[in-house]
Image 1 (cartoon, rainbow, N blue to C red):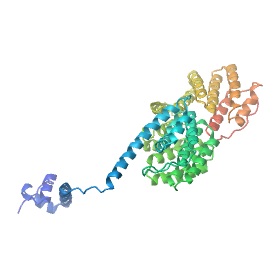
Image 2: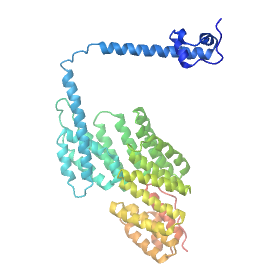
Image 3: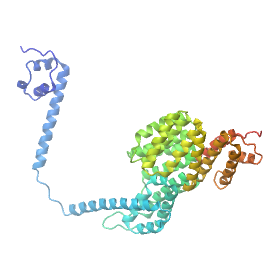
Image 4: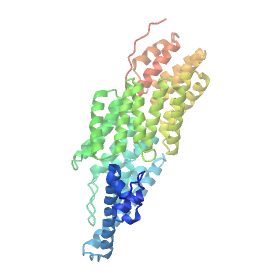
Length: 459
């Protein structure tokens, strides 16, 4: 009787047994396998694998030996049409990139270029591609708004007819995409009412086309983004959750990440920074740093803001640095600005008052250049607060009077917190605590939500 092995056979020996080649296995291997359940399973698995490999080899040989079927009379033109569609799409992408570069020039004739593109099917495709670049709205919102208006104006005529079997690009589709771009730009500028109107216009345009659930979900997402910054959190959450379900059904993981990121923003606005931090940890894992650069940078920025509010200053500093790196690499100018604004606030929280004052002044000048009126106000309030904390009260009062002249021409005019501060400027009984409180309130109002404000008693 063959002796059993004292240890389990090697995989190669089990494979020999599975192939029926017992002579190639060590003496006693077969007897071991018969009495060892684990090796019995391993041998069976290797046998199944060997059969699969053999079957694959047979199929490969049969396919290689098969005579190719002759192409039908319709196959050649179909293949040529597909090749041409790919080439046209690539050309439209290149044209869209050129249009975005042109749009950065304030003196460029965007309207004229958009009209030329709208006159052909390929050109309309380029307009759609350009309008779908939401990162452009985050980079230079004023120029993105100008581009959206030029595209919308150009898409006024009927959709072009199909040429050589190519599906036409309806005017309503071009107009809808332009309005979504406008909504993003208007939200970044701070014109919330107009941003929501632009989304609703896009929703109406999409409704005239096919009943596409993904297009409706996009509108839900962008409208929810506006509602979140208007402080209407409950309807914003409902729309975001509905959009997330559709994005998930379409396996659009990066859009799911964007929706979850906006839910995190709502948590920040509600003051729940600990839960928001956990949400942004998930979002940064879901988004691609390159393909979703804009949303990824926003998530990094929002995460760092949470850390700052939780007094985790070193971690916040690192988070802001990461967000700044991504924003600069992808030319997201407005996000670069937001990072710098938050870094100024971080210095204020840490007590680095001279540095915070210089940073706030630089950020305020940049806000003027970018046309971000409300950010210009909030940044100047931060600079004034720094002056007060440095004991430079006269300079603080002069800075606040300058802020007052700017507030009068923004949506922040009439804010109860600012009204209280403005009423104290002439008597001169402004204290630093009130300035800090007003900065918080106007910062919240800029972001579209309201903090409770209790009018302080005069000294």
